[in-house]
Image 1 (cartoon, rainbow, N blue to C red):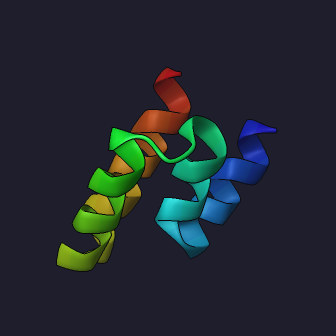
Image 2: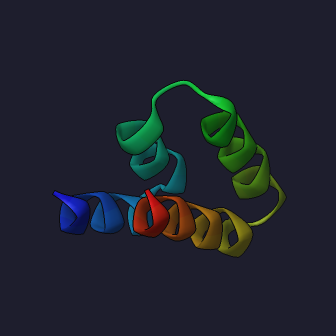
Length: 52
């Protein structure tokens, strides 16, 4: 299942985070990071998926 989350995170980072943690702090933080730049949002999404 984590492989699917990583693939979805590459396409749209908040989707992968949402599937892992739901509508929590990390989801909103990831949306903010993705709006500031795709790479910070992607790195945060992969970090959340890998550590939880």
